[in-house]
Length: 454
Ligand code: UDX
Image 1 (cartoon, protein in one colour):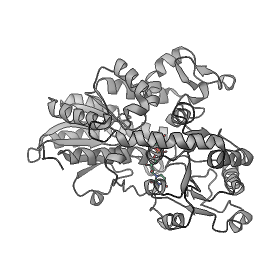
Image 2: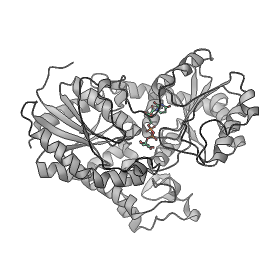
Image 3: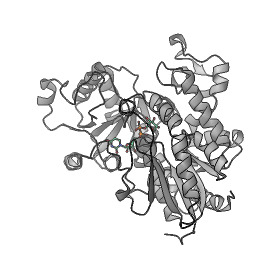
């Protein structure tokens, strides 16, 4: 722990697992650097202060009705939160800023998606630094939406899906980060708000590292007139952060099950905290896994299958009876612990940014099956740029799934991908060594925060 700096940071996360986890990891990193930490969070998906006794928590009313809070439509939820949180957030922030009994506030750090925080911070004359929880490569595409719209990419017609995107040579049109079939004005406004709010901020923090996304970071440095701090992977710097979101309890039974499996033999399957799949796809995944003959650990969240199924009742008895201990199913796993287990051979993921980074840090090759937004960009980078995984098309059938698993785990092509994954892991581990890029960038961030004047 560094000497206390006598300065306080106020952090404001977007209340979803994939956003809360990195914000809390960042909070822990900056606390280790000597800052006091205050977290403003919504009642919706509210945080548990007892899991983080070294931080101060303030909950704000978000105004969501019961039916709004139970919606599975993420864009809708973000839009409602963005509209209803402004005033409660302003009141809470104003009262924290006027509290002279605490350390003076150095800045607000808030998620890029909550762009309304910029005008609130401006009106209260407190500097705002942005955390973008997704990758830098996908961020460059969100920032280019106005240009891409002008060039007629949206709505995306089926006939253009396979075409390359001239402005982003690594991407095909089908990789553009939209929510499937959705090209609503609301979505584009959110992306524009994120980009413009960030441009008006005092700095941008990324959970990434130079070696991974050098090109995208270079582009952002050219286009955004603010300092950029790639200081990830956060969890490599501060591994013990737990989100304490009541999504589900981590089922530790999977670790003892993994202990009984051969090294690098298990396919770990998890599609993060939001993605839901169709019943037909669910069954193809089940049979693809069974037919691959590889052991598998499968996270099935109870709400993750469209059509109202409770949990496993869609799986045929024949599937469950023939598992013979070769498959283990849980509702929620301790994912970082799972990925670091010697038995894991492959991670079949939806390519959320946190999952992607966690896999890279453990040198685990990926099978990517992205569903929406940044996941498509992340998946393309994993398979075609960093070449540490393979992609499965949405709606892939059991035969294709079985072939992809076997290609990655037992065939020659897989051997090369596995070797590249280990090389990339080494780079991810080096960036936090003294004088590594994230180590230096973190030092720069601390100096920058201390230099900010209201
Ligand atoms: C969302 C978006 O879907 C994603 O595209 C965006 O990049 C971040 O926000 P999510 O879908 O939840 O996130 O995916 P991801 O970013 O991978 O985050 C999931 C987090 O939950 C990871 O930190 C992972 O370790 C954790 N997790 C997941 C568990 O701890 N246990 C599980 O069983 C599954």
